Length: 158
Image (spheres, rainbow, N blue to C red):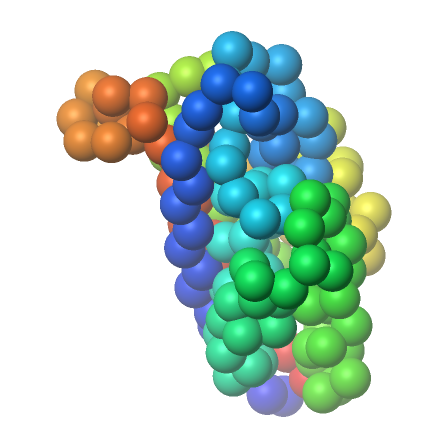
């Protein structure tokens, strides 16, 4: 069996006037993530992990932030396309483990809905998806509430 691991990382600014998309759902908050798409930092990190595991480069290679077709797009669509790309190479996803780093809002109550959204797109069970959250203890750009970041790792296999 061919088994590969991938790691993904993403970061986005936070600003007023934007929606906060995390893990494929909208979360009510006073600020949202800024980006060319819906700026879902968690799904972007997962996409990068999957693409990296399959040696397909990164999300920017496939979905350029200068291409108007991706402007404002729901990142679940990007994740679905990434799943199709790795599937064309004969890979299946075993599991995804991820960490969100943000000061607020607290996302614990949203994790089940995020896992459900990601499972629907990837074909995984919710038990194959881990979403954790932490803060940066008020340090750096995350601590000042200027942005948020996410890390993800995945295992794929043939």
